[in-house]
Length: 434
Image 1 (tube, rainbow, N blue to C red):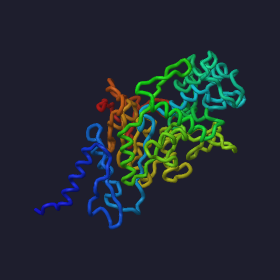
Image 2 (image 1 turned 120 degrees about the vertical axis):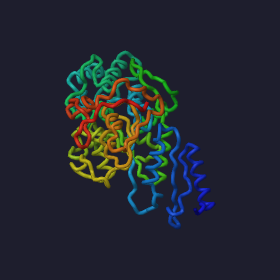
Image 3 (image 1 turned 135 degrees about the horizontal axis):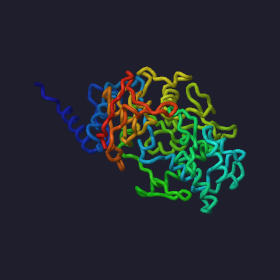
Image 4 (image 1 turned 60 degrees about the vertical axis):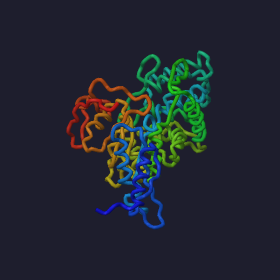
């Protein structure tokens, strides 16, 4: 048998050292993979992953990256990450909302009519918000939700309750009549409450909240009105390394999030993803460049209809529209394999559709979400991998996931069984990665 050359032996040793170092580094490319005058690197996935997930991710990079083989003229493979609790621990939308409430940045809505902030607000919520906040500022002026006075605290509490619990302080439902597969009104309400501000101003709020939350020790809480809320956020080192490695391997890396567009833009810079590769909830803008309380549409949904955001099937639509250039109602449909992302990562039922669309590998961070974990554990096509959260992972779910009965939520909110692509029912699944 022919012995390997000294150069090839040194290359193998270098690759092993790179893996052992636990970081994403560039190892020497295979001689046959690079053409003369080209630069080719094979990033290595760092340590800190569950089971064989590190190896599976490395296989993805080796298979689809620019070095296997090096073809500079081909389209880049696309990778799409959810943001909150996927790339970071905790929620950057929440962090921004809490900062805005503490610093008195929420504006009194037009005409003092809270129903103008969301088409889904119930009369009970509209009345509760008007009662708590209506007398505190003229329309368009900031509400004193952070001044520490009883009236400011009461207003902050009502807004925070509607946002955080989808109910009024008195317990009445705050939203009604939405499609559970295209929008979550509470998520959409945060960008809608940024009405009257420019994107630059909202980015400044997010920057201030980011600075506070990254500086706060893990486990920190903060007071918002009279309530206690989470006060810290952390980037997951493993995800930062993975994003960096994918980009070095020639992947086109995107973020798709159900937090506001300017907010995610600020945070995404921390992992090297530019604003033009972020897809968040997007407001429409007035002639003066300020945000309106209405949202941009996707697919068959027109701007201002406020019925589709980056949420479940809405994420599919926005990814198809912004990344693959699909227009009109077709953007709401599953596209051919060559017009879909190769890799996707998420943590919640809100990510199910765009994860299912990924053709190569689907990474799930386990937060005990029924439909997502049913599909991930069923793993019917062998392309799902599950990882515990990297910080404060969830404990094992005691009961099985109710896949065969109520794991799926329909457009009208009706629960039902989780179905595979061939319409067969996924059996109940046991939580095994925690």
